[in-house]
Amino acid sequence: VQLMESGGGSVQAGGSLRLSCAISGFTDKPSCMAWFRQAPGKEREGIGSIQNDGRTRMSDSVKGRSTISRDNANNILYLQMDNLKLNDTATYYCAAAINRAFCALAHGGVWEEKWFNSWGQGTQVTVSS
Image (cartoon, rainbow, N blue to C red; front, top):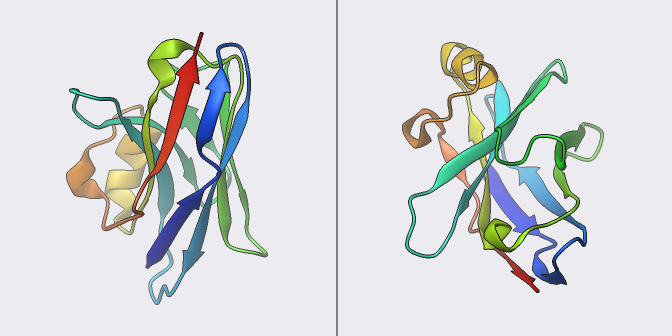
């Protein structure tokens, strides 16, 4: 699976961004997709995932401000982020997992990097005051 993120940029606090992740080249359809982010000096963290049936789960850090969706016809994953805060500044990555058991755990709110088989190159989001 090849993944390519886009849509990052600079935005003022309180603003919105929509990140996209183009999905291509898969032979085994991913069982779920997720968004991770890595802030400067911090470890990469999962912030949400979407199952093939459309169910989503968001981390507490972005819940109520961000949503994940997907356009199945065009194989695009989205992350809509609203009311952005300074600490949302990070590089954002999309990831795909094949293993259904791992995806079930992700839907429970746990996102381990090792569960995800494919990654995009990341897109930078910078939130300023």
